[in-house]
Image 1: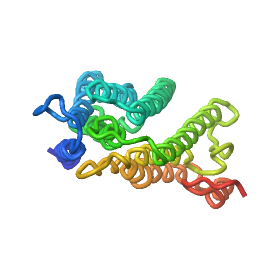
Image 2 (image 1 turned 135 degrees about the horizontal axis):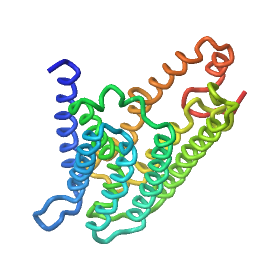
Image 3 (image 1 turned 90 degrees about the horizontal axis):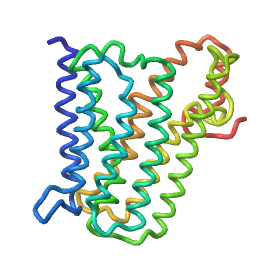
Length: 292
C-alpha cells in the first residue's frame, strides 16, 4: 500500500472516530428514540455517514463524481427531516432551524449539480476516483462535513429542553439571512459572468466580487454563524460541541479546501496580469468592504 492509500485509510478511520465522538457529545441533553434507546442526535450522525457511504458504492463502480455534491445536500435535507420526525414538542426555533437547513441545502445542492453537469466533470476527482480508498475517503469526509456543519441545527431540533426564541434567536436569524443572501447572490453573479462568451478566460470583479474576492465563502461562514447563535440558548454540557459548526466551516474554507486552493489557482492563471495584481491589492480576500 503506497503512502497516498495509507493516508486515505487512516483518514477514513479518523473521520469515523471523530464523527462518533461528535454524535455522542451532541446527544448530551437530547431526546432518544425511547427511554433507553439511541439518541436522535447520534442517529443523525450515523445517517450522515451511512447515506454517503451508500452512494459511494455505485459512484465508485461507475467511476463518477457527478452525484457527490448533490448527495451532500440530500444528506442535509434527509437527516434533518429525520431529526424533526423523531423529536417531540417542536418549537419555533426547531422548525426554523430545519427550514433554514433545507433552503440552504436545496439551493446549494442544485447549484453545484447544475454546474458539474454543465462542466462535465470535477477536476478534483480525476486522480482519486479510480482508487477505492482515496475516493472512499472523500465520501466519508463528506459525512463528517455534514455532521460538523449541521451540528448546531440538529442540537436545536433534538434538545429535550426548549427555550423561548428570544433576542438571540432573532439575531441568529438575521445573521443567517445576511449570509445566505451573500452566498446566493455571489454564486448567481459568477454564473452569469461565466456564461457570457465575452468573459472567457477573465476573472470576475463586479457585483459582490468587487467587495470581496470570495463573497460566497463569506456568506457560507456567516450563515452557519447565525445558526450557532440561534442554538446558544439550548446548549449545555457536552452539547456545546455544536459550536463546532461555524468553527469548522471557517477553518475548512479559509485554511484547507477553499481560499488557499482558489488563491493559488488565481495566481497561477493571472498572476502576471497587472489588472489581477491591482484586484488583489484593492479587494479584501474574504470580509467584504465597499469598493474604493
